[in-house]
Amino acid sequence: MKVLHAVLSLECGGLERLVIHLCREGIAAGDEVTVLCLENPGALASKVHETGTEVVSLGRTPGLMTIPEALHLRREIKRLRPDVIHCHQMSAALYVGTVARSLGISALLHTEHGNHDYSNWRQWVTAWIAFNAVRRIYCVSQEIADNLTSHRLVPPHRLSIQVNGIPLPSDDAPSASVALRKACNIADGALVIGSVGRLVTVKRQERLLKAVATMVARNRSVHLLLVGDGARREELEAQARSLGIGQLVHFAGFKLEPQPYIGVMDIFVLTSDSEGMPMALLEAWAAAKPVVVTAVGGLPNLVDEGVNGFLLPAGDHERLVSRLEALADDPECRRRLGNNGRELVAAKYSAAQSAAAYRNAYLELIAGGAH
Image 1 (tube, helix red, strand yellow):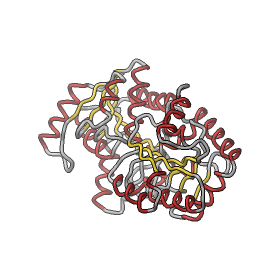
Image 2: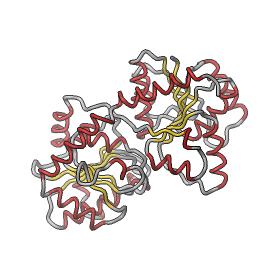
Image 3: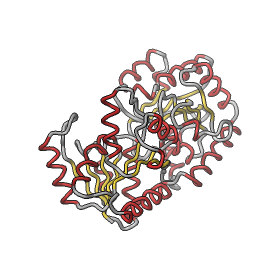
């Protein structure tokens, strides 16, 4: 089976990492897999190449697609002759979906990875065209699916929920984490709070900086490890210094394989204003880490309060600090939450399971023919 994944680019993010996992699993299943980047290849293109997947880049500029760009896209799809096309962004569904339809390709599906505001009529019309260019739409959380149906963009019968999946940790992850802890000069007795995600506004890492500063002011021995990169890095570094915790905050940058860094953490935290189904949360659970996350997006459907983690209102500083301090004082609770999270990932959220579900969808679409 020839599978084509369509994305804007392969820059650093959870969506792109999922595509890498799907490529790896697809190649292992014997498929011929290609990733089509509408824009530039991006930082993770080399990692996709390593799986045995071809990467094709159109190099187009953001904005409405021009006629020459559409013709270029049409030529590439004709050359690749995919049996199925899997789109991963609305723009990919809009442009790749419509061009593929014009070529008689009907095995088209799209994964919606996050929530969007469709109150603007132009955004709504664009989304409606994009979603109607594909036959099946998969959402990584129920909340995302509800958002599409409530805005009358997609009827329920064309929607499915497909959770993300991750590879399970390798056996050498714990030893790598010990080395990283020493490299960061983190004392053996110090608590390490950490997070993984893009350093962008919606992730609101400044809330975590303030929480750690409060804990330090209360004579807690604590370090903060932030894995990820983005436009706000310099701003967050400056804020850490202004809060007097610059030496206690470690900015690791983007890591394609963050498991060793997650292994350093005693508590994993997300302070975001919006989330779909963050792969970093699954990776924290896979490493048996307790999680504290804001009750936004798909997170309330993932986190079982007090069983595998804790949910907090977004922006509630005192609740965040209180929860972190309570977990700091209760290592047995941390172990229990982390172990429950690891069992959940092994049972429901492995990369192999996610890839197999999508591959079954590909085969069903191909067998169904034109609709």
